[in-house]
Amino acid sequence: MRKLLIVAAAALVLLGVLKHREHAAVHPGPGVLAAAAPEQVDLDHGAQLRKGDTTLTTRAHFDITARVLSRKDYGGADGKLVPLDLAMGWGRMSDSDVLQHIDISQSGRFYYWHVQEFPIPRREIETSSANMHMIPADADVKNQLEQVRTSEVVHLEGFLVDASRPGGWHWKTSMTREDTGAGACELIYVERVDVVPAP
Image 1 (tube, rainbow, N blue to C red):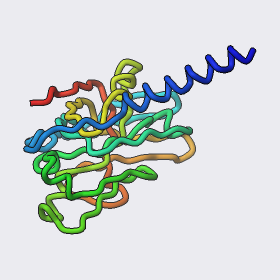
Image 2: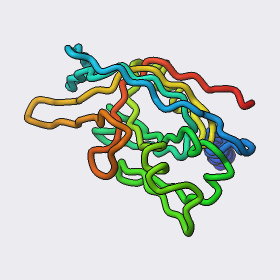
Image 3: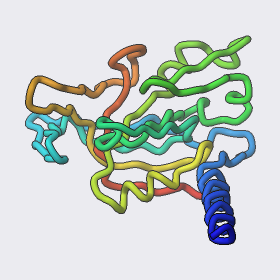
Image 4: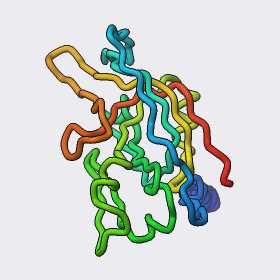
């Protein structure tokens, strides 16, 4: 029995090490890694999709290639719909030389940044980065999102959506990269995930 417990404990430790390694940050060199801003095509008449008891209304087709500044996984009821958030950066917010001067964190579905001295203008930080809530379209996409690591450049395709449930619960997406604060996060129904090879 004791031998079995030791083996089980060792297996748990190994699993923890592998999970940490899976999400461990990569360390790209200097230079802009994702130059273009996200592409968005607004929809006049959105479709309605179902995820369990949640109705998703498509607001825009969304296509982004950006650097992952941070990732945060979530559980609970909302975590079933949106299991993780990715803080994403493009333009100079994908450059290691800039990012080394910016402290980045995530908590409570928000993305936070702090600087001692601005490496680029404040407004550029605000409009070249965003916290994005990920709704995987299926199990394969969920698995791909689970493997995304901080500082990787990823390409995502899908839709900006509003989410609602019976009883009045709702979660609205941002429709612009110009906003900040509460309500400024994108809620993305992700249909495709690709990791962009380092240059």
